[in-house]
Image (cartoon, rainbow, N blue to C red; front, side, top):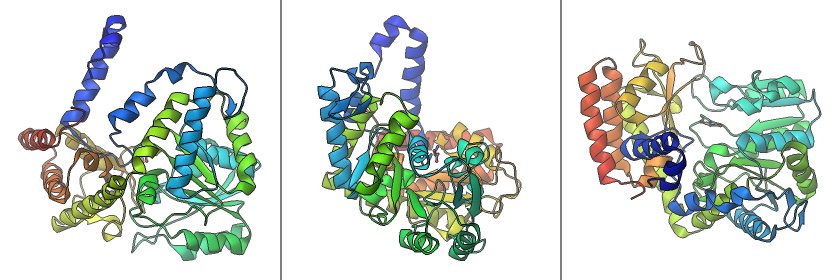
Length: 415
Ligand code: DSN
């Protein structure tokens, strides 16, 4: 990965690309929404399909020369159907947010009402945050997690669904460490006569790998990202029944997007093929086993882990319990200096500003792709705590950086 063609044209960008390869190789990527895709996915994503316009859908394009684009998009669709058991799949959304936009645009009118989880409690910007188009175009009501248990407060969901008559209820989250009970949401949605959108952006791979219950076939619409736990090309996906197929397809193109990013669709097809292999189930199991090992060890060190553990690929730490004077932002910076890359995150009942909240979110998908196991994650937990206990101490950070280097060397990336 020396980017020699880029270097001939643009040494500054080549240097930055080589720097990024080195950064990913030599530090621990623990941002829960990130992963390391295979070289096959990288190759497909950087293919000549970046040159191709293919507005429309396979067999019905607005441009000529789409025979290979059709073949690839059909492969992505068929593989997605097999992975998640969906009747209808649209693989063109440019991202998870664009996938959600496709569903809202298909099913809602401006001013309609979304019922979703608060961002501080684990929700996502595209579920109705005031700074996002969803908060500006739609009326938004929000539910929360139970303050004691850190788990979805279904009484709150039900009460708000009955009181506010939403046009869609959104489940699925960015920072929720527990299994989501899709059927309970579906029951509430059916009781109040509304749609249910399950956003599985973070957990597409866990669902495909059989370690999280699948909402496809239960929820009316399921959206996802394709580059997170599923480890395919970058972008989004929408899954639904035949009943809503045309509305969804028209909402994505021409409703909300122009030409599909066919190089990304190729990356999706290749990643989905990899995820159909039996090894992917082992990967998904290991992602969760690693997160559990990490959560347990952090708790052994006295850290407050939201909900007391995890069922998924991430651990949410509320620093107010063990490190009341340490903000998430300061923790994030100190850890990055020590070679551990994660993000500051809001926690339920947040008391600090969103740019410098009280928590950190720690994910295991990328390290698991590198081959890290539970023992490695216990070691990583120890290193995280060393830094959190002394965030100002440069010597501690330098020592941790050396341990990180050894872990990276033992689990090489993109050799
Ligand atoms: N940026 C993603 C995350 O980190 O959760 C969501 O879009």
